[in-house]
Image (cartoon, rainbow, N blue to C red; front, side):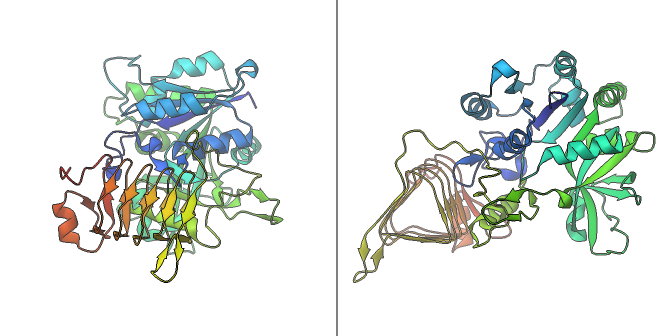
Length: 416
């Protein structure tokens, strides 16, 4: 496996996820209780056997760098590592100008390792993928570049790079975020789109980003510049993500492929709700393919207290994920995800909400369709998610879909 180097693009600013990205990079945003978004792509590669991984960081990278340094230590004696690589301005006075420029500015990493192939993957998606299956496909096709792709509804395709292929799955057309996406032949309601996950022959990648760097008219992006320049002349093949299979020994079955770009508040919120169904779209409990999360140190197990039926004071959670250190003290939690250290006090009701670390919900509070970032204490009798005007007046972010986001360290007393 040492013939392939993994480079994770984790420098995105994540403006559409604000206020969750006001002081952290998008890949460092907490997810599903005990994970960060970056943990999904890293787990996929480690589970697949690829353990030479460079994570290219840039914006608000402190918490991401700390997370990687403290939790992702591999066996260095066997040249296994997950290295966080901050932007270094090695080629001039600019930070990364785009995804292709991020690779160009770090060509020294590739030259040091001298791999046969290089993975270039995004660090901010939620999914499971056996990347070795993509690697095998790349070798069988003798591809210069392989792109992972997935079909999506045609009305969503404008947010992605839209792909056309021939019967052998070779790319014959590509448009980055087109206003009118082309459908899959015979499927007018569906388009084939890039997942932003690539595998290159090393020489092809080095030459492509080097040539792109010379083009003053380029925005130095893989989707907008590198792919359109490559596919007419090189062997660019498309890997069908829906054919990727991960075995579940407990159920003697295979997981259904799942991938979601959590680049907006809506998609981030909906991805959490995907987790709490009886048969979740993405399985966090498959021991054959774990997503490696890193719980808070020295946290006790979750606790549920008060079973006072007479006074309707019940500490209960249904269709929810409750992390370590949480205390449901006479409150009711439904269709929600609670990160470590959350407390829900008596008679409070939390529904369809995501509460990050160390949130405290006061007595008689009611929360619905709310994301609460870390270290927020909600006073008793507070209602959030029921009155849009009032939530906006308080200074919360409220999306068009009615999802309310309370920023990290928000103080109700100070109104900020």
